[in-house]
Length: 518
Image 1: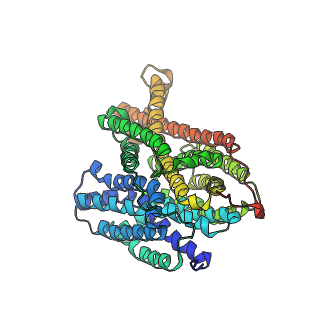
Image 2: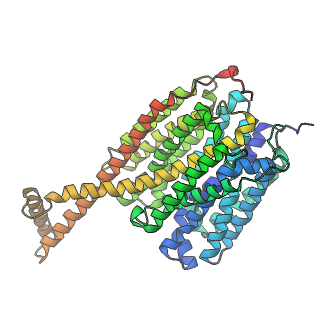
Image 3: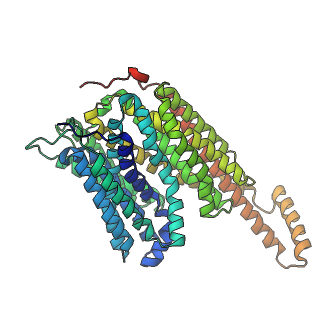
């Protein structure tokens, strides 16, 4: 007897609530770290493990979620994961020491790892094949908007209540999601099950945990420890490379792998994953970079910088389902190319920023990006899953979400490092003329001394004041040029991706769409 089929709107709401909460939790604690540090008497470097521990656990669980769904049954696995996530959220809020909150964040990350890929797989199955683009538009509403809302929600709760409420707030929403999933979500008849007597791929499991755990720590801590000048980062990088290389080789030949990498034989799936990885690499890099630019150089508060991101996020939220509907009538590759070019334009626009821009200019750049991002996420997700058979969606969704998340982590690490390197480069170039015998420096120094004398009158150290001001201007210009360089580099990535799009097979549109038969 087939399970009942509730209205797809109820299923959509049931899986999107935990997805949005889980994505919020990847960034909601960022703005609360100082409060957590003070409350738990932790060091500045130690407290960052509140973020890293969650990301590491999340990264390990996401790729194995397809296998765990096959072992437990997807609905049961989703409910267990949500229960673990809910309980650990409450425990994080009640933590009395740094060790406790790190432990509970690891458990929370393990529980949250299933929520994104399983929700995506359920949505893809709930909607008919020709509406997969719409399903991904709805799914993207959480994926794209969640990281923007996270810092805003975290800042508001921390400032007005307590940092503990960034975790407590999860509990009632998760309880609602548990009820809705229990009532409206069912395992499909084609759900793969673990065969009786089937051996567990312990080697794959070990290599996956070691490799992805090491890689995530390197990406999250590398900039803080000055990358390969740290022995810890060198060792973890070597471990990650060896373990992940061994994982790929082992999983390709294992009869029942933890992660079935054979799905990359599908050209569309493989290419779309490359595009999504690099697109989120550039997108999240810019999401991190723009608020830093506004706070560091323009003097914005964190809250005001967050609001600059808001309009772009709101536009993306509204447009995602509409772009999803467009995939039913327009070749998704064309939509994807349009999205890549719009994002390239927005970042090229940011690369022309100066220190006189107003909030409207900064917001406009994010609005353009907000228009372009739905044209990337939805078509790319649609193209990746277009020819994946239903029984393989759990595994495909797990891989897709892992690579998207890793793209984000690599992007953040890349922009942080490149910004530092370009700032050093420009400072070295600008300081070549920063000495008293330089005509330009001497002329500007005399001007400033005259202005200071008019305002301050007789003052014994006008020369030091003037030199100090010029050095401050030099540092500002150095950093400004570095930011512009990084924005430009990210724009180039989006332009180059347009060429890759056409490697993907042309997807069927409209009612011609038929599921592949294995």
